[in-house]
Image (tube, rainbow, N blue to C red; front, side, top):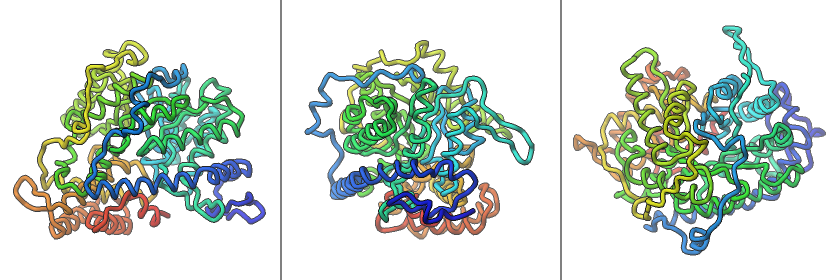
Amino acid sequence: MKKRTEHEQVEGTAVRGALGPAYDEILTGPALAFVRDLTRRFAGRIDAALEARRARQARFDAGERPDFLPETRAVRDGDWRVAKAPADIEDRRVEITGPVERKMIINALNSGARVFMADFEDANAPTWANCVEGQLHLRDAVNGTIAYEAKDTAKRYALGPNPAVLFVRPRGLHLPERHVLVDGRAVPGALFDFGLYFFHNARALRAKGTGAYFYLPKLESHVEARIWNDVFLFAEATMDVPRGTVRATVLVETLPAAFEMDEILYELREHSAGLNCGRWDYIFSFIKKLRSDPGAVLPDRGQVTMDKGFLRAYSRLLIRTCHRRGAHAMGGMAAQIPIKDDPAANEAAMAKVRADKEREVLDGHDGTWVAHPALVPIAQAIFDAKMPGPNQLGVLRDDVTVTREDLLAVPSGTRTEAGLRQNVRVGIGYIESWLRGQGCVPLFHLMEDAATAEISRAQVWQWVRHRASLDDGTVVTKDLLARVVDEETRALASGRGGANDPGKIQEARELFERLATSTTFEEFLTLPAYAQLG
């Protein structure tokens, strides 16, 4: 691959990544100028928002607890609604998510789900190739020309007659794109992903009668939602498409955001496509935000379920808030995948999926997420049976009252050595795959992504930090963790965990152990891991 030469640069930009086949079709001068202009206009505000996160975390570490904001009470009490959903996303009963890989995009669009969310974030290891080639794949998907031929089988994949509606999740505000500099600084990954996709596809999407639809990850405040809304307004004006071409669903996957759901919808109201229960990141955020509180130590990850404690409270509040404002309330991810060689285990896994989806539809959710195409018909059947209309916006849930204490309620349960080992296996196994450029990984019959790996390493850190006791009385110490890490790393290296690169396994082990035992808590594992990513 060649390097972009100096004369090909756009004023103020420097592309440091090598150019692969067709990269010039995405990294055009006008597209890079659009990303540059987004960066110049909004990077400073993103920096300020990230600093505000750090300041708020310092207050949490000092004992403050999240609460509803007194200064925005008028928004919460006000009588307003978001813009009506476009016709093609009035019914979102089943959505599937996955990385921006060509074959996976085709399979997801053909899965029978109403929506496919193409993910540049938690399901994507942000190598330069993954990020730029993902844009190529999505452009072809929008144009209806995407196809793929498997090298090993010569099987050809192409779009079917009724593909899912496409949403795109750009990276979170905290993640940089180090391969492109504007005025000497790395472009925010969020602006790189959003900017390239919008520039190349907004007009084509409009011409097809749809819009530029997004999922926004890891927002922590309505101020951050305001930044995104201003990004959308600037992008629409620059590309000369109507206001409201962009619609965005915000993943409520941080603890502070749960206290600002009304405010987030209000900031995005002409661009809003509702809220989603980002359950895995939400568990991670609960641990992270309350990391200094020994009273917030959670039980095994498998026992922290949506029918308990803070998760139950926030999902019901999300439905009530959204429906009051005329916005979709989307349910969370079913991470199970088929277990082909064990019918009994497979049936148990699918039973969990069915129970989860029944809870969501009966609570009033307008749709749900799955991670594997085989789960689409299961979720579809449940929502078809319980939700005859396109959504449940009329289910207002005025009976639901959720307090600050409810949103901070720690679920009961036990901590076990098996739970500790599972966290270590998933954490190291996922990081190993991520360092090889794979961001969505089947491990131990679940589809793991960065969010679930974050739970694993954060929970281990929490248990070590607070010397948590397991159900047999054993205290979780650094020495105990070192032994477990050594044993589970050997199991992964032997192939029992599915890992296949001894060098990356050791890198993953070292990073996991450092994150799990450091004195200070690293905000996101993907930040130090990005420095090691090829």
